[in-house]
Amino acid sequence: MSEIKCIGILTSGGDAPGMNAAIRAVTRSAIFNGFSVKGIMRGYKGLVFNEIVEFKSQSVSNIIQLGGTILKTARCKEFTTPEGRKAAYDNMTAAGIDALVVIGGDGSFTGARCLSDENGINVVGIPGTIDNDLAYTDYTLGFDTAVNTVLWAINNLRDTMTSHDRVSLVKVMGRRCGDIALYSGICGGAEYILVPEVPYDIQAIAEDIKKSKERGKTSNIIVLAEGAGNEQEIKTIVSVISGADVKVTTLGHIQRGGTPTMADRMLAARFGTRATELLIEGKTNRVIGIKNNKIIDLDITEALSQTKKIDKHLYDMASKLC
Ligand code: F6P
Image: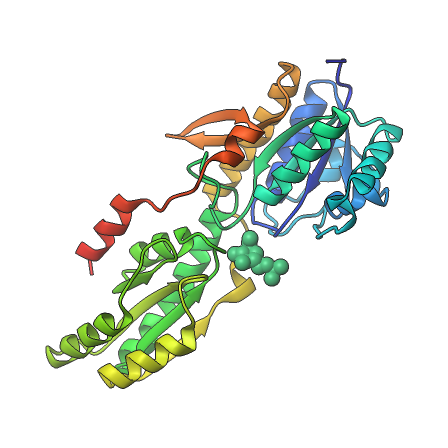
């Protein structure tokens, strides 16, 4: 592997709180170690269409506290073709970039792997997605902040639902992964948590709500993960069987924004500095993660081959606490 002098950074896929803190950590640790840094705008699109800017230490001042990504992010159709990736590679080399740090989720890592396989470019991936859907790491950047945003919403909903003796059905994001629902449901004290990974019987839940009403429990919170059912259908079944007044709240993109929490900023600092270290050590085609509070790295292909599973212990625990 030839000596690396210039590191390019991009953010790709859905933005996640903590991405800016990670951009800052990669930039500052790279400059500290004598590399030059370039920021690539709008993810892979910026590589294909040559939107590459010089990054100095001051380029990442005052961003640690900001949600979103100053590098922006976009979906790029052109990058899915070998011709598009060749154009990306040509622009990268013309800009003097000889290693790429990609902050994103599984789709972004797949793009990085293709670029590396086809053109031999050095890549390192930092997991950044609110979904926490990457199997090889305990946490992804943005997950903690997103769960805290959901908790804020659940707390507010609980106030009004209790006052009106209503049932709140809160729909959260996560794509095919139930972690946002599971963690926010446990920490928000939800009575029911519906995730795509575990089958559930909505009729039985509705009957349960009816019985609890007869015992004097007049309000309930149901957290519904994206991919675990249709909120309007669930609302109808629960209302008809239990007789409860069910209100649906879809939190949507509000979960993706906001100032990153301490946990996400710390993760960003640790992931970002490790990315630079890996390149100094000559390790490439790696993704960074965290396991049992230790920063780890592994081969991209190996990481992508792992299948994310729900934490069954946490899921079972939740049912004992409601
Ligand atoms: O991957 C993050 C995420 O917010 C998912 O939870 C959600 O399914 C998806 O992105 C929404 O994507 P978009 O912002 O393109 O609608």
